[in-house]
Amino acid sequence: MPPKINNSVTWQQAEMLMQPAFIRVVDNIRKQLDVSPWTGSYHDVLIWPASTSDETKATVTQLLQEMESATLEQADEIRKALSSLPMPHPGYHLRLQRQEQQVTIDLWDLCYQVCFLNYSPDVPNTESAEIDTSLIDETGEVDWLRLEAKTKDLVEQVFASLAE
Image (cartoon, rainbow, N blue to C red; front, side, top):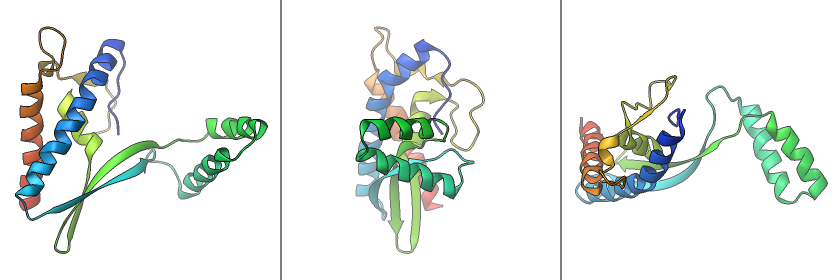
């Protein structure tokens, strides 16, 4: 689940850090895959709010498909129907496989762990997230060396936990 952001400064900092963090996460995963027994594949997924029923997911999916070929009038009606339903957000997963073992890792969760302090995907985010400002240099730009170091450590921890 994405971190909760309540102010525009944190939002701007997150926007600045997320793409570089994603690039560093993917590159460090590639480096780990080169030296590990795991094979990996990437997959686009839809992430639904936790309480969404299968029936609601099917309804939303059907309405979104109908939207693609709808007239303007039909599209307005579909938008009205969708406005009261939960919407998924796009996700990106890494599926790791080693013999019969399979593990799925949410890449956005890894990026959130890089960019935010004390972010944990397993803990509900009831409080506003706090950006890791050590990843931003004194000129307000991304500190690439610190970003790389933090990302490398995190990805190494993920692969080390798989070896246990």
